[in-house]
Image (cartoon, rainbow, N blue to C red; front, side):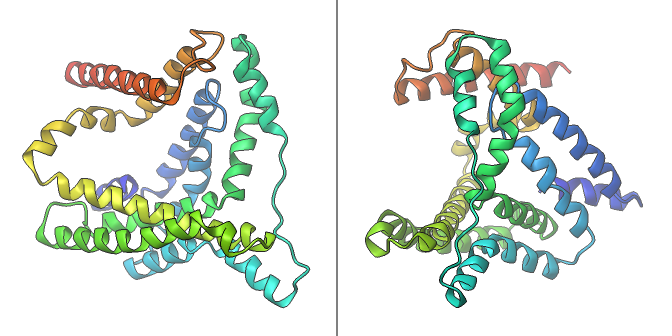
Length: 297
């Protein structure tokens, strides 16, 4: 979506934002390596790589963008392997193997910052990319990027009656789709125990369910934001939103210090509820910092 804002702005000035965007993706990869020093398997490197799809489709029309987004969000790799299996029942899904998580755990569970940084740098990004491919997230992310670009071009985040009607429909359809997908995922083992089904159909159901729930969250937020009370409650998010990359990396630095052994070392001893409380506290600190920074600079 932000790509659509920047691309449109530069287009109105008679410039092609594409080459500049490639430079920004290179910078994002650099930030990924900085963030990856503190947090293994971080997502910015994947974004910088998958984001290149926007350079390719930047001049496509709305119809072409929507078709591309739907195709990528359909989990074509998983469906392709399953269809291949129907013609050759000896075919298996080529899952990438990785023993990197154990090496990452050594750094996370130790008390040496240097060892954590070394293991995260050597193994973290590779492990994250392999995981994203194995669970179907890599191609889905490309579809989400194109969908966000399409939403921006269609002006569906602008406050209008047209956009409200659109998001009401999205919310209704997403809820209707999510509930059966969630139930199928919960009971998948009772439906089939074939490995090929687990490697392909289960991933498709999982990713479709995740996508549906994402649409529930987005459309709910947009529709609730029409009310002044909700705007007032969520106004602090505006500051982190305007400094999202800073907030993201800052969260890794703070979280690493709080949870890992080189800092306070709370990770092994705190339960989920306390972790959630710590996360909320860190978010409040971030909001106040970003608010101060934006107001001052």
